[in-house]
Image 1: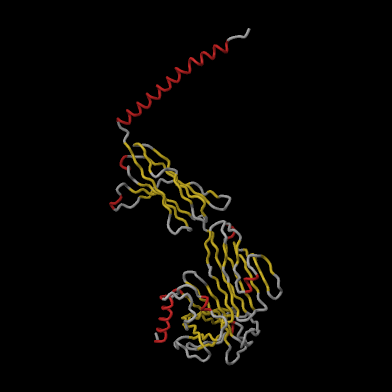
Image 2 (image 1 turned 135 degrees about the horizontal axis):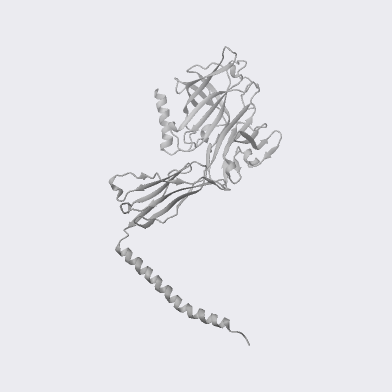
Length: 436
């Protein structure tokens, strides 16, 4: 690795160490160019081959020398749109994925309405993606070749790029989201972030939001600055005016789950981001017993673990037993006598499930701990609910206590009868008297 690259990586790492929240001062970012080569097979069908090539984004001025001459350099100059200022959060090299691809205008030959643009410009997209899902930024790079080559907008005739070539480009537009994947509970307010930036006031701007769910695609919102027409809601026109196309959803429900697509179009460019929204409702876990159960030897008790109100359906419930004095390194024993109810589906879209077993008390189990463990995709850690079993021997003292209790109960009942029988007899005689 060259000395220049080492210096640049040091600058990149320093941004993280010093807590810098923007990388606007970083002059170079390592990237991968995913190059394409289209060829036709014997049957006349087009086949695309992809080649990953080392490249870099260099921010500077026209005519600057490549900071890393061993890679393909995309020299970004004179841009009103700077992708670096949208990179938020402490970022080091391994947390940022940079990918450059060629962009086809699908045969549309038109001059970009920005300064210095030509009809024969060549287009690239540069996508910056945070590995922890903090953001995805797609920028459009415009390159004006020194010698115009017809058909450059057609992906069948890409111009070759040399291994150490420097291409002078300008960032003319970007589309980004800070919520590429969203997890939210039911009946919650949720906003899906979508932002864009264009190097000029776009007279022909179209913003759309669509929802793709179970193979069906529904348009939620659309706005065209050319026609002035707006359909749907959830996005404010004032926000679009400042480059904010974020969508505010109604209170979430099960049918809110799906892939939301934010698209921004300024011909001949079209940028979009997919935002996956997952409904995640954690279970409420409870037992039908207290934290301690006291049973006599050979006694029985039905123990139920209940998981309620979870979504989606993928829940796992297990019962375990930890022997008393479990410090001996014994692992909890999974119970194999557990029975399960069927999944109960509630009106709000959530589910419930019960896991139960019949506890047979024995003296050698006294002091053992039983716990129910519930795992669900909405939980970082499983939920555990437990109780301790105390078993007592059914001995002579117990027998005496039962005799005392039984004899006392009989005495109380006899006393009640002695009091009530005379009263009932008097009442019966009074009812037998006939009036004269």
